[in-house]
Image (tube, rainbow, N blue to C red):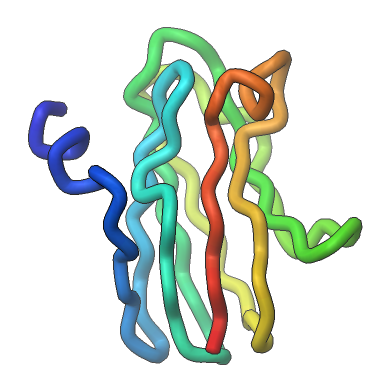
Length: 109
């Protein structure tokens, strides 16, 4: 867990084309918080390391691009999507997660 916290300290994680993005959710944190990837297919694997149930939602503007079902503590969910150029918000939208800091950005170039 300490490695996850150290890995996400203010840097942008770069994911290659046709790559896989590993996301860690806990209470008050989504790691990495900043991701950059080229347009195209992206697989997102979301691990819930927290004690509460979380979700993962990817939005662009006011449109939801993809989401998981609720992810129970200790569980993992994955989704494969095609992303186009632009900026997306990654967030857990259960309860007050987003207000408490469980969000990040995905920049697609």
